[in-house]
Length: 147
Image (cartoon, rainbow, N blue to C red; front, top):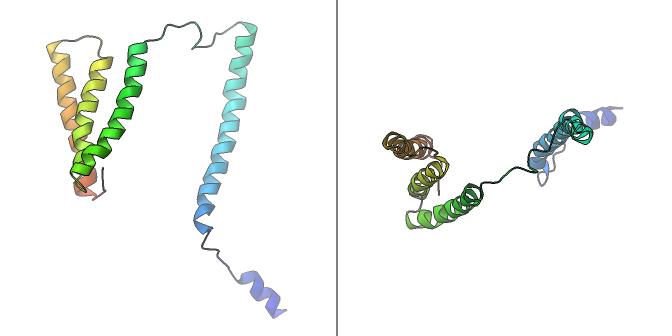
């Protein structure tokens, strides 16, 4: 009887797979939430589209190709250049800082509708202060290694 009780109270941990326990729980929770969203939001929307009450938001609308492909190009260049510049200044976070400033400037200018001295000044100030503040907090205060 005692061996049966001790087996019930003993814990055995497989250290090769134990780190996957909580991510697996999170994946299942996300899958269930995704199914709930599909059932409550997407299915009624598609039914309304089929009845003709609504239209698909993508079909029939004009696309701003410059902004779409410009955004994709800038994001790819940002991550690539962050690594290249980061290799020039290893373990300092300057790769993040020196590529984030031009990235924010170019993205902001690409989506800017009204180009005035005031809006361009706001873009430039934001592009310098925001990445510098993030770099300072992450790299200097919390000692998080940035590229």
